[in-house]
Length: 394
Image (cartoon, rainbow, N blue to C red; front, side):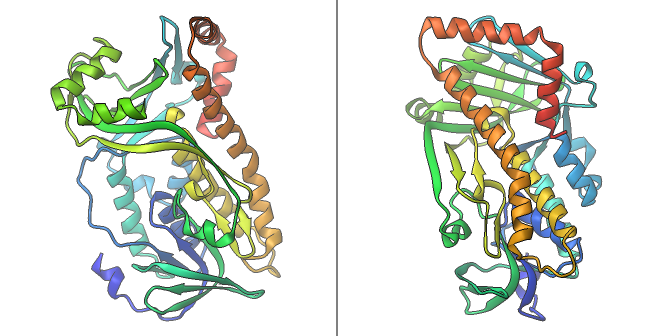
């Protein structure tokens, strides 16, 4: 990353400034640069991550299409990509819901990929973009003028740009500068992530259990590994994180049973608080939000990253189709982006929040209703195909 730090800025004038260096921010910067725009990416330089860490992404068909268009997908090692052909969801009784790629007439339901692989491919692509400058700097002041936005950096530099893209996560600095109203509700849960080695083959199947108000998912990885995402109540989560590996594996197997045989943790366990966040607006004069800066949803469907990547794809589409007389920060142009994203964000936020509420509700009567509903839905092939298409972003 030293090459980025020492690279001189030929001009302080840019067309796009992307703030945020996560997957969504890097993808936004690359997408804009490949449109031929002069782009500044403001993101901390980070060292290369471990080859196999505990963070994975479940990428939908829409994300695959985006990365193919950006020529990232073709650079990924196929041996480290795991397709999901089946998904089995279990209620808190014997109820089961089964999604099949074969029955839905799609090649796969998702791709599971470890974070470091995808981010490394993005880093390489960004390095070879001649019209992109990657700055290991932080912005600490944003001024919006009629003809441009000014970003003052922590080293005293001032970047002039037509548009600022806020891709700086759930605690977004850009969003704060916009003065956007934020609605946040904590789920009182912690998401525990880890990688596990399974005794039995997972057969490219993703599993999810709704169990005592908590949600556990196991996503397939190469060579009989799976990625765990356990959305546990805060007190229970803290207790789980404090267990040694043998005791933690026993807790897992108590929920999973013998479906995958013995489970052994092969990575560090990490926990992060879960919440729902909605913003009043995705845009402001010369500013647009993407990814977690724009929305935060429950991870139970694994769709948060895909939602952010669809933001990027749509923003790039809108910018590429702008009229010659508009600049990139024109509010009319930005309103097109906001209108096109509102419904997708609203539907997915509502769906994940409603499912969380439904399966968190205590009581035997409610439990019987939701398990009966799960069983009934499992018999509706047409509805299941529609749900798969929606999750794939098709």
